[in-house]
Length: 327
Image 1 (cartoon, rainbow, N blue to C red):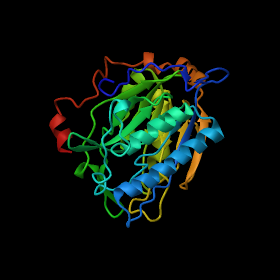
Image 2: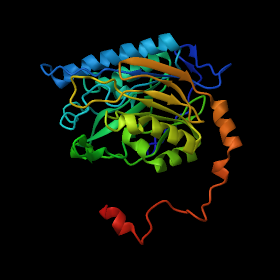
Image 3: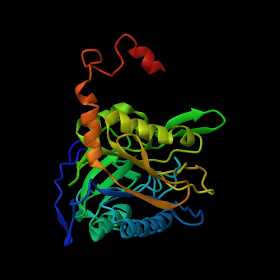
Image 4: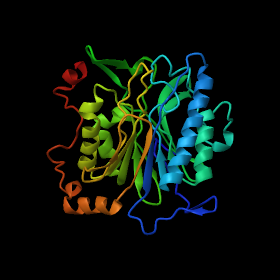
């Protein structure tokens, strides 16, 4: 794995089970929208263990009920979305799965094991990663062999202040990632980013430039920005990049200080919502129509029509760079 880009070439066989691509237009993707329960009387380790058990059961149910080739979890699926709690819930992520120690790497251990057991690609939402004394909001991807094939640390930290409605500052406890993350599957290349990253179209364009046909965003929008922008941004990224888009949110927990919007969604490359839900715990799924992705790119060939002579660089020009930074 180099600079966030997976160099893994997938095997078509896993655990004696063939990863079939016949008679399908693309992979079936299932999203587990999970309730994250935190008992204040328990330690972070105990709470995390309970949420990992819940996630494992949901992954198994999603695969059994939908036959999913790819299962996706939500942002912070095993811990509270709380800047004061990221450090206590953080854990290292070993690069080599042979180095896993379940007591030290509980989340990686569970995700790797269930991916191998079920023979699926598993996108492990996100959880706090401890690396070199810093904490990152990190998503991991496992192959049907249980190998770690991609890891994305959230690039854009969620620092906002909407007076009287929502204030949050991830940078108080998290460090930002600095990589574009894509990985290969038997069906297509997939791009991976986390929550607030979806607001930055430049990142999605870079994933599209690597020929991704599916973009996945585990995310935990809130009840202020969620109803306004959650679906809008997914459909915008789908239309801008002529990709399918999958988002995975936590369910809304009324006992949580941070109220997640929920509404995990799957959008096709035309910008149509093909699967969605409300705020409660659930599983959604859909087959990703890659023929439709190819069709829209052929019918509306924007990738061949870009005017780089007009907009050669999307960075702020030197004329107003200082003003950009001040704002």
